[in-house]
Structures are given as C-alpha cells and as structure tokens.
Length: 504
Image (cartoon, rainbow, N blue to C red; front, side, top):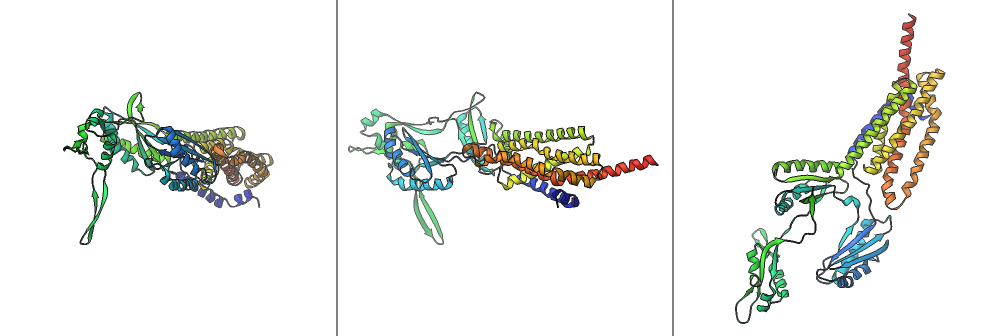
C-alpha cells in the first residue's frame, strides 16, 4: 500500500502524527542552542610562557626551545612554530583536522608538567590557549562616567560579579581604564648612600608581602586553622619594610631610599565609546548556552544597574544576539513571503482558495519537522543553519504544489471523487518528486565530507537544507493528500447542495 493511500485511509492518525511533529518541533526549537556561528574547533593550541625581564635570545634558549622539544612529540601534531620576544614565549601547535582537541590538550599538558622543573626558576608556568571563534564575547558593554578609576573599581566590585552570577555566563572581563597600584620609586643616590642594592629592595618586599598557612590548633572538639597575615595593608606598612641594618647602628627602611605613592599601572588596553574614554566589560557565555537567552538576562541586569547607579552610563556597544535575532527574523519573513506567494500563485491557477490554504499549513509543519531533525542531529541555530532553512523555504512548497496541482487535475478533468483524486494524484507524482528531492539533497551531500573551516561552517547549512526538503517531501506525500481529500469532500457537498437547489 502506498504511503499516500495509507494516510488517506487513516486521516485521524495522520493528523495526530503531524500534531506530535509540531509539538516536537516547538520543543526542539526552544531547546536548540543559538549561536552566531557553528561550533568551529580549530585544531590549534598555543603554549604561552612568561619569563620576566629576559631578552628574546634568553627566552628562546631557556624557554621556547625546551617547550618546542617536548610538544613536538605529541601525537597528530602537523606543524610547530614559535615566537620569542622580551619576557614572553609563544609556541603554536597545528594538529591534523579531525583530531580530538581535548585529548590533544591533555597530552600537551602532560608533557609541559614534566618540563616545568627544567624551566628557569623565575619563569611562570606555561599556559595552554585554544583557538575558537565562538569564544568571542557575546556582549560588549561600555561604561562611562566622570572618574574612570572609580568606574573600574565599581565595575570590578559590582558589575562584573553581578553578570557572572547569571545562568549561562562563563565570565566577564574588564578592559580599559586606569588600574590602581602602589608604586615604589627608588632613588639611586639614596641607595648608594645607604649601601643598599636594588636586589635587596626586591627581596625584602617579597619576604615582607607574604601570607602563609600557620597550621592549626585544637581546642576541645574544635579545630582552628591559622594563617600568618603578612600582606601589606597600607602605604605606611610598605614604607616600614627594613632593607638593611648598618654596622654602625640604625635601620634603613624603604621610605628612606624610595618614594612610595598610589599611582596607575601601565595601560595594556584602551576602551573608547563614541569617541569618549570608557570602561569595557566583555561578557562570555558558557559552551552550549543560548546566546539570545543569555543576552536577555544581561539586559535585565542592566536595567537594575541603571536604577541603582543612575549617574553611571552603561550601554551595549555590540551584541551577537542582535545579529542572531535579525537572522531569525529573516527566516520568519521568508516563510511568510513564501507562503503568501505560493497562495497567490495557486489561487491564480486553481481559482479555489481552499487548496492554497493547504500549502500554507504545510510550510510551518515542514519547518517544525526540520527543527526536530536539527535537534536530533545536534545542529545549533546559527547564521549558517538559518540560512539553510531560508534557502530551503523556497523549495519547501515545490513538492506540495506538484501534488496539489495533479490532484486538482484528476478531479477537474477526469471527474474523480475527492479520495480517489487525492490518491491517484499523489501516487502518480510520488516517484518524480522523491527523485527530485533526493537529487537536490545529493547536491549538498558532498559538503558533509569537506574538511577544514569550510566543512565546519557549511555542514550546518547542508543539513538544514536536507532536513527541510525531507520534511517537505513527507508532508507532500502524506499530509497534503489527506487535506486535499478533505477539501474535496466539502466541495462535493457544496456542489451537490447547489445542484439540488437549482433543480428544486
């Protein structure tokens, strides 16, 4: 028994099936992760090592070359290149496409852990960095006001923490603005006069500015942890640090050889908004989180902050959610325009509004089915997948139009009944539209085997087109014949009543 005949004989079961598909599609749409781009994991890792106060030659000899030697033996490494500059070493590893980067990172970290003891004592522990465009901030905020130093402190103490408490937010980073720090300006003349070296100054500061665990004490059933608090709490404490004790007596303190004051650290980043200095606050989302939902939560927090701090300007400089919302809006518009145009074309040729209405119902059902398939295939809603759906919308109505036109032809030209015309018309073109749909899908099939960035980007587009076309094919062969038969029966009843009235 043909699929169309089975659907026509079981109209209630068919209706319940597509009702379930619609519900499943709506649930899938709500759960689909929304991103600007597909998840593109570049097979690249970078090892960043800081070696303070070392020149490029020393960095290359004592840090870069040892790191290169150990990471080059990691499996699946394709190329290794490095850069050494004053105080910094960067070693970049390119892996073959398809490499599991989580395991690759574990291998690299294991090799680096074994190397740490061989690096210079003053070198910091190597840091492994990944390359992923989806790690870009989803929202950039600009904070403006009169005093940038106070704004940065407020951003760090309040705004940053408030945003990081949101569900789906991984972290918030602050850029721009002055960073307060205590600066020690040593006088070379005073050092020489008191017979103190700069090394003695740095060693004394390191020893004095230190907090360490002090063990524990037990009192009855309770155990108390102890800590030695040695970190500086004020500029005065810093000035009291003892640097030397001359043989003739007396004490040389830090304030005797240096000027101590509260200043600003050298700025590594500068943020401006509309030409004015500002504080930048970058919001990063957790992997797999819904970008639009996270952006909505951030917007709610911003409204609260505006009420709490009316004197501070907090504006959204850029947001990925805006681009995603525009893309979704374009798909919805394409669906509406496609449905309206299909309705007009069918009405123009068939002169009966009931058949075009069936097309209008088939489009959203096909899209809901495509959403369900995207969820099962782990395809996120992004610019590429939504573009694939928009591309497929134009082809969604093709199969339905062919089926309905053939059903209409058998009914009007051959005088078949509603069920018979629906069955014959659908079965007659079933093979042709199936071959046509599969041919179109086959065009996008090879994209699934493309490697590299192109394959990662266009896979979602190809799958979205394929899913929408498969859904439209099933709708055309199952749901539309049922709807055509139903519409035809109503038309038969209306024609019969008109005939009886004309006779009487």
